[in-house]
Image 1 (cartoon, rainbow, N blue to C red):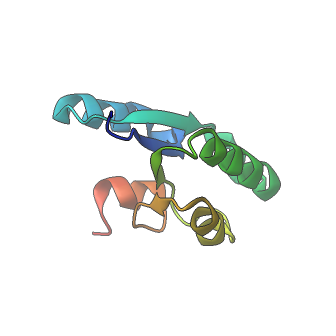
Image 2: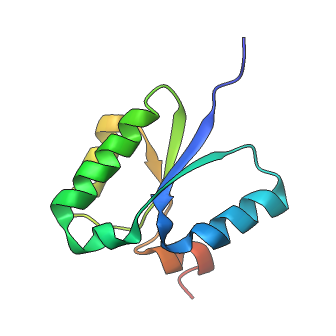
Length: 97
């Protein structure tokens, strides 16, 4: 029996930085980055995020997004996915300080 796949669904705004950290640390992690432009339309963001989560429903999924949608936590609870802690992508990458 193979181990479950760990997947990251995240905002494409920091794709280069996240890919760098994954390679540098040799993390066994697949990624599914969504367009950063989704932030300007809550309906499109919700749809794309829910579609991305559904693509990985049989995998353990973490979400690399800030509090970018008012229903973010509800969508993630429905998908049984966890989100990185932070208000926005920059805070998640660099910290609150």
